[in-house]
Length: 178
Ligand SMILES: [Zn+2]
Image (cartoon, rainbow, N blue to C red; front, side, top):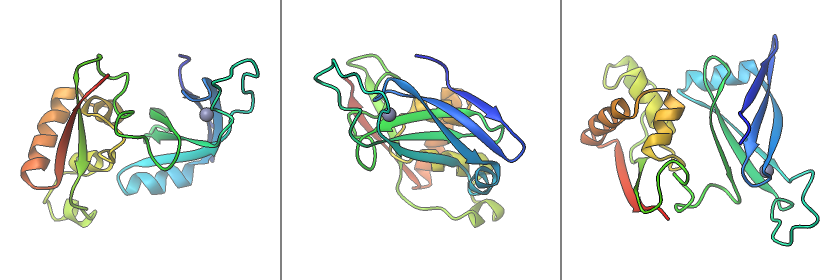
């Protein structure tokens, strides 16, 4: 699949992300101020609802002409660190982690069980990195995908998740892929 691409301008960015449903690049413009404001709260994600502008007329199984969402994670360097495409409000459990793990393997999906306020970081209850990681545990990402979005090695993410789990902030759901 083609690589996601970002062009950075003075006050906005133009992002091209691969939509697995359209099997095409989808482009969107995002205000840098909007990204900065989001990142202050730990993470920035952009959801873009669309239909495929060029559905394949030959393909009887074509579904991309129905409205769906592409959801992109953008970091403080204005780069795309993760992309999800799905119908409805969020990816289904069976779609999470697809492709990040071999078939028959175990997919682990961390999910926040207790909402944490930014104040907790100032109070030293959790670190900023842990706070950011909690934001990625939105149920749309496997442990491996969390590592990708947080741009940290998987074993580091596993250790952080274990700490957060002991604090009662996160639980890890397991299921078999394929
Ligand atoms: Zn699409």
